[in-house]
Length: 237
Image 1 (spheres, one colour):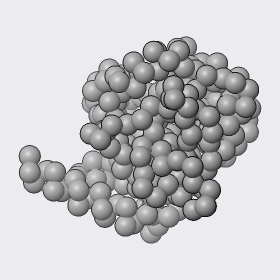
Image 2 (cartoon, one colour):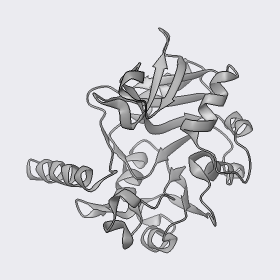
Image 3 (cartoon, helix red, strand yellow):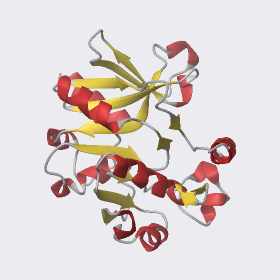
Image 4 (cartoon, one colour):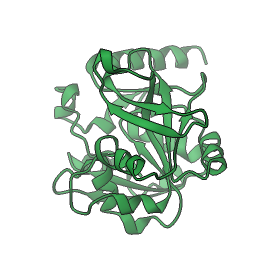
C-alpha cells in the first residue's frame, strides 16, 4: 500500500501544480522512485490511495506495466488518513503486506525487515530511523527484545524518550484491519498503533542500519537538500 493522498501544503507553491508524491527528484517523481525500490525486493502489486490531483498520478503511472508491476488505485472523496485509506481497500489484501508513506524516500532493506518480522512473529512491524532531533516525528520506545512499548507523536523536547522514529514503512498482518474503523479518518501513529499496543498485540520495531537511509520531504528546504544529494550521487556514479 503506497499512501499518496496528502496535499503537501508545506511544499506550496510547488504542490499547487502537482501532488506531493509527484514532486520530481533526479528526473523522476518521488512515487516512481518508491515503486522502483519496492520492485527490487519482489513487490509487484500495488494499491495507491489518492485524493489531491489524482489524475496526475494515474496518468503518469497507469497500470504499472512500464515497471513490470500491477498498480491499482483508490480515490478518496474525503481524506481518510493513513489507516482509514488502508481500511477502504481491505479486501485487496490477503496476507502480509507493506505500507509505505509514498511521499518519502528510503533505502531500507525490505528483505531484512521481512526476516525480522517473521522471526518475531510480529503482527505489525514498524521500520525505525534514528533521528538526532525527533521532535517533528513519531517516536517509538522498545524493550530489550525490540518489542514496541510506547508511541508518542511529535514530542516536545522535554518529552523525548527515544531517538528512534517511525520511518512511515510498516509490514502488517491482515488482523490489523480489526483495529481500524470503517469510513473514518484514522491515523496509524495517533490511533491504530497505540490502540493495538494497549490491547497487547505483538508489535516490533525494526531499527534501520547505517546504510538504510530515510529521506523526508516535508518542506522546500528538505526538497533542496535531497535534490543536492541526488545530484552529487549521480555525479559520482
